[in-house]
Image 1: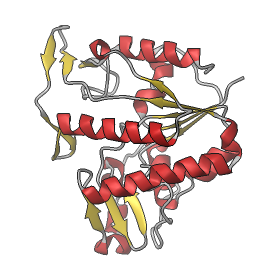
Image 2: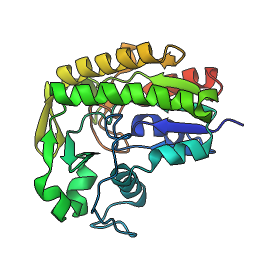
Image 3: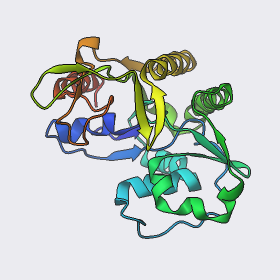
Image 4: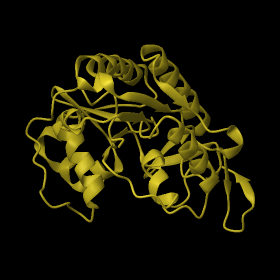
Length: 255
């Protein structure tokens, strides 16, 4: 039986529930970045055992894993047969905190952890900056070396090459265009086109570093968001046919 690990976002994790499947032996690593996975844990940050401020357990666990840098050990312990990467969560700025790095996610904002002393001197690294891209490229190279240096070398690597949708179906089923500038984090506006260009660079670089990876990309016609999506309207919450197509291609890899 396959054992799946996802290093990515809900666009891959949602394949199972949206299509009525029940995932078995699934490890889901989210709300992180290849730029932060290999950084030192954030010293002096205390995390709660119970999710604070209304956070759900899974997003809070993902946040804690990003702060404490426990995801890689969990990945090795899971011993996956397939590792699926997608880079949709690579939309958040980074925070440089002492000698560590963290993804500046919505969960971090609402958790209350930013009020702790280590974050008072945090330096923000904008996602669209050359510094962030350099950190990400270094992280991608470190991931390649890590996979080869551990039992993970036996896993089949899959790259889900997702892009933000520029169109969506409204509540009546009519197709409409997104505004080119979208809100990704409580007022932080991002150019949808620039984000997709960045994703193309990330995906091309990852594929070059890891030529054995199976690349999965849904046809452009299916890259359509859905106002009725379970997580609400967003450029990366797609119509069901998108998930069906990606699921079909994943199944061909033995997932």
